[in-house]
Structure formats: C-alpha cells, structure tokens
Length: 332
Ligand SMILES: [Mg+2]
Image (cartoon, rainbow, N blue to C red; front, side, top):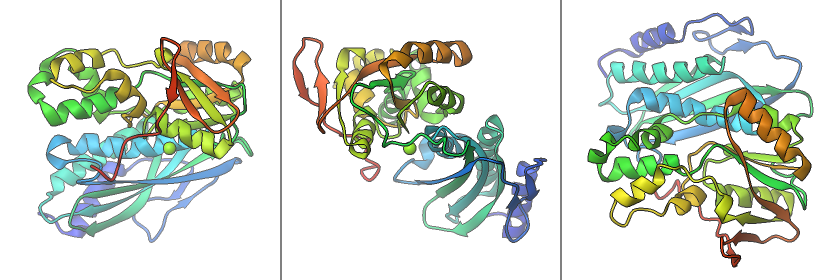
C-alpha cells in the first residue's frame, strides 16, 4: 500500500462526501448516527471475496465496487423496501494500491448515488485476499415487507427482465475474451459487471399483491425452491415461457460445447431479477405497470401447486423434476 491508513481514509472520505438530512453523523466518528423514518427498518449484508466471487484480473475495481453495493440493494428490494444507508468493510492485501481502493469506492459511491443511499462508515483491514463486505439498511411501510413464505396454491410465478445473461457474461470472460468484441457480447458482459437492482419494480409488484418475492442471485431453479420451502408449496415451471436472454444463443454458437441457454437461465445465477408470486388475476396489471413505469418486462413462467415438488414442464408436454441446482458460490 502506497498510503498510510489515515491518508487512505482521507481519500475515501473525499469520495464519499455528501449531504443527507437523514444522516446526523457520517464517516469519521466512532460510529454513524442516522435518523430513522416512520417505517420498518430492513437490514442486509453481503460479502464478495476474491477467489470465491470474483477474480481480480477479470474485474475493474470500479465495477467490483458497483456490484458489491447492488447485490445488497437487490436484497433490500426483494423485501419491497427502499435502501437508505450503507457501511462498507474491506480486507485488502498488501499488493493493492491506493488508486485501486479509491476506484473501488468510486464504484460503491456510483451505485449508492443511483439509489440515494448514504455510505456512513465501515472498516479497513489488511487481509490475504480482497474482501468487500457491505451492510445496507432499508425502509418499508410498517408490516409491508414481502417475504419468501407467502406463496399460495394457484398463484402465478413471475420474473422480471430476462435470465442467464450474467452467467453468460462470466462464461465469456473466463473462456475467450476475443469474442468480447462481438455486439452480442456487450449485454452479457454488462449484465455480469453491472447488474441492476429492481427497487422500484419490487415496490410495484408489492402493490400488485405479491404474496412472496426473492431476488435471483442463484438462478431461477434454486431461488424458486427457496420460496417453495418457505411457503410449504410446490411449483410447476413452463420451460417454454422462461425469458432466456437472447444473446445466449450467440454465445452457445460461438463457444464449442457452450452452455445451453435455458440451463444458464435456470441455474446461472447473478441476474438480480425479481422472482415473485402473484394472484393470477394481478399478473396483467403488474406487467402493464412495470412496462409503463420502468420499461421492464414481467413474464409469467409457471404456477404454485400443492405439495412440495418442483416440476419442469417441457415444451412437448412432458414433465420432469426441476433440480434446484444453482450458482455454487463455494465452487468459484
Ligand atoms: Mg436475496
């Protein structure tokens, strides 16, 4: 490290400076002091670890910072809450220079600004790998959080956006970067480096009567299984209706033995789209509202059924078990 800790903290404070009336004491004291609103307070934390969640040569510090914030905002959104404050703790190996850390904070700040989040503090420590640990608070109207446990038999299963692009981007970055110059590669790499957190969309789904909701961090199959377990129900997914990211077809064609697009959409992970259950009669209204307000698609992909099985309905009408295999964070 080419700066002392105090010099680095001063550089970080310059990146983070800003006025927020909800923050009484921000970065620089022993602890932050924030003024709560009238709603329920929602808390989440998520850690990104070098070698587990990212590889340093493959990601810019700015994108890493941006994504570290967004994955937390996505969890706040999945409760139908709005993000408010963040704390950031870093583990930094000795070969990291100060410019890298300031860029990382630049990305964190960029994502925080997009969602009107104040970064109010955190911690810095020496470590053997880069660790970015982010804690975010949010707020939701009292009793208004949408949980994983409310799905009911007969509900429709819906997803925002398209699926599989982030996993496709990761596959691309790890295999053959000469393909990155193709026009179809850009949305895949972008989805991997700069995911969007669906905060407003989640609020709209909650207003439409969402009975359960989760953000898709580990793939449709795995995250749907979590809703089913928590709700004590089963699910049938119509594979033909899963909104597979269009560019995955080109990726599969370009890579020999490339991943099947549907498989990436079901099990790829890191899309950070929303998966929710809605009363069937609410789906059309919710779809219209999401398109009007955010330009985001909503697709009904299946139904909640009694029991506890996860079933995939093939286009030809055959049924098979939908294996809740997802993104394996421990497999790198
Ligand atoms: Mg989540």
